[in-house]
Amino acid sequence: MHDVVIVGAGPVGLFLACELGLAGCSVLVLEREPEPRSPFKAEPLGRRGLSSTSVQAFYRRGMLPQLLTASGVHDDDPGAHPEADEPSPPRHGGHFAGMVLDPANVDVAALPYRLPSPAPEGMLTHLEAVETVLSEQASELGVEIQRGVTVSAIAQSDESVVAQAGEHAYAARWLVGCDGGRSTVRGLAGFDFVGTEPLFTGYTMLATVADPEKLGPGFQLTPTGMYLQPTAGYIGMTDFDGGAFDRSQQPTREHLQTVLRRVSGTDVTLIDVRLASSFTDRAMQTTTYRQGRVLLAGDAAHIHSPLGGQGLNTGIGDAMNLGWKLGATVRGEAPDGLLDTYTRERRPVGAAVLDWSRAQVAAMRPDPHAQAVQGVIRELIGTRDGTTYVFERMSGSSIRYDLGSEHLLVGRNAPDLRLEDGTRLGDLMRDGRGVALDFSTDGCLRGAALGWESRMRYAAGPARDDLGSGAVLVRPDGVVAWAGDRAPDREAFEQAAGRWFGAPEF
Image 1 (cartoon, rainbow, N blue to C red):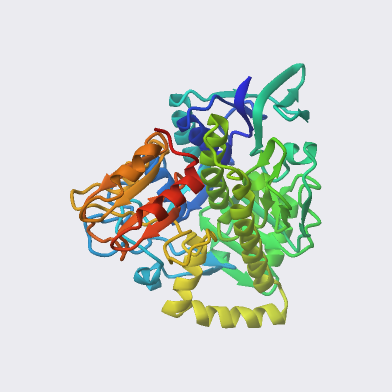
Image 2 (spheres, rainbow, N blue to C red; image 1 turned 135 degrees about the horizontal axis):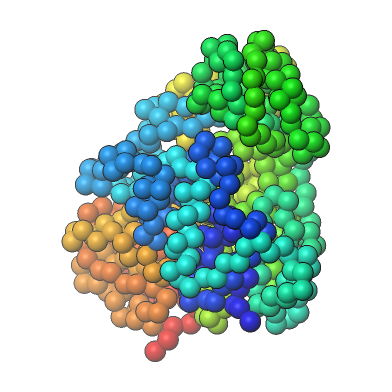
């Protein structure tokens, strides 16, 4: 019996598998598709934007160089200058409802608790690159991946859960559904899935256009919808039909041309369509991320429009949050209630992303009211404060878990704190343990940290920038669990360590 079976070998399932592998768990990943490669994962259809927090996740696990290479990003492209006095500006600003942000207008200094880091403020990649890097990492960690396996039934008891696929039964102590927006696991395990129905059908396609000059560059909001052509022949568009067409039939060249002409307001002609897919802005979320020994992550737990590229990033955040908590539970080291904090922390994040998606759809509707809203939004994101606000929401910088502390650093994704000897927080997190950074002059927390050596690393010394703290305790997912003042309180540190890492070992 495995410790954990993960259903779904997409980026979320693979990232979670790597986290559990780091924790020493035996992990089996079951994937329905027989082959990992697909034209919908490669450039350009598979193109995705990784937010700052997602890039940091790869950096902290030592996978960023491989990801940059696989994504075709050159060494001088990320825009990260780790020795600089200030964080580097983002290279890509993203968009809100098709209204593009100017990355130069982002006030990086105004983002909460930013420090210079080798990890760029977001990057463009594609699904094939992400999955390749994660698959290689998972293999190195001893994760088993089986492809061409379709789960058809799930049965769980107090001690285990069994996934049935044909004649094969896969038993584990825990099962996690990372099998996408049409999750089989979600349905079989009986999760409630609630939300709002779609307003549009969206399309992406690779096509040969007879007269591409009739289409404007970049995002084009029109009185009848939206379209974009980021590269020659790669076209995306939204048609406000109430989601009626999505997956009801295969989109033909004739249908796609009709929609494109209506949305663009031109008589553009498609010569042929090589690949096409559809999607909607349906926004749904499970009421809990756990049912007994079955958990959900990524699109299996929440679906929404791809506008703004939040789906992949939210899923990676789920995997980071769940991985160390489930690993500690498997090892028998988790304090009471640790696994329950997964739903408590991540579900509000998912709900906020759903509302962010709904707000964009509302602003894109083809009616005079929405077009008036677009005018207001364009003015707002034309300002430095407006651009910074939208970028902060999209980058994940605004996420802060309520961990019961008034310290403004606690509950946030930790900045890349650096000691005077050059050691960075990111360097200390590659093995999946938490980190205690002690900036006090006498290293007063050294003895207190000894009981948790198997679960956290301890590093002491003056910091190049301590952000006003004398010490910080960082969870394995990069979230600050506790922060002390210039003379950190040992008892408070021990209480925080016990809360997140269980009883110490001596």
